[in-house]
Length: 258
Image 1: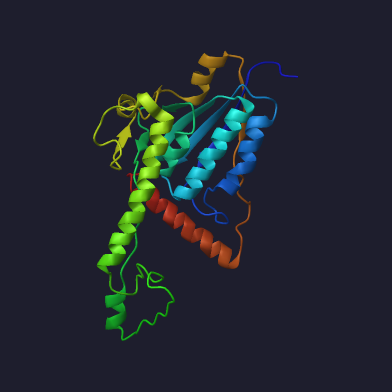
Image 2 (image 1 turned 90 degrees about the horizontal axis):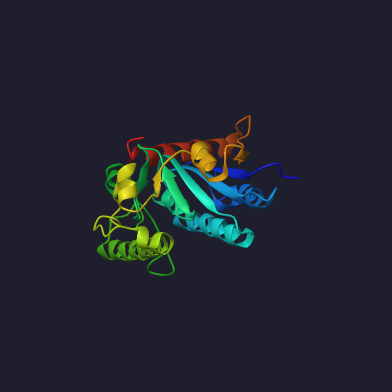
């Protein structure tokens, strides 16, 4: 039996990547979210978010899961941003009914990015010949070991534009009239603390415990759910893969000066 109000707290930490990697994905957080919304009939679910973004698909899947569980169980959702909720991280925050942050939290970056490298000149200097055989003229699009083609860049920009429109539509649906009429809102720009509130990306400045106590009383209890990392690192190729993921994640945070 419940002795008082209870808030489930789910921590969503790190870059968002594909399933099977050590980064956050729908598969990795699904069990946490399912338990948070159903175990003990919580009065609310609070999301602790600290993410620079990542995969648009995984961001969409996690956000959709949060909304489905919230509606099925009639539980309000509050997002509390720590250092950052940018790009896909902000997509997760926007799945909540309200978004709160610290005075120094970074929010926004509503845009899409694709980064790569070109190494064809290096190969030529080393006397290495790149051989690629395809069935389908677009199969080798943006191959980093071949010279860049204008038609490939145009195709990539078209794909990025489609993803960007999807992102914008999601934010408009979730934030609605709260959004300010700011021309920089969907350019990939970021805002800090109160400035994020002023443009409608957040609802206020506040931290999890005191804000939830204001809503549910001083006797509110918290039940936490977060991903557990193994005590011993996995060996071999998986260990190397995890190291690369950590480097990529570090680079994502570094883009925002963190």
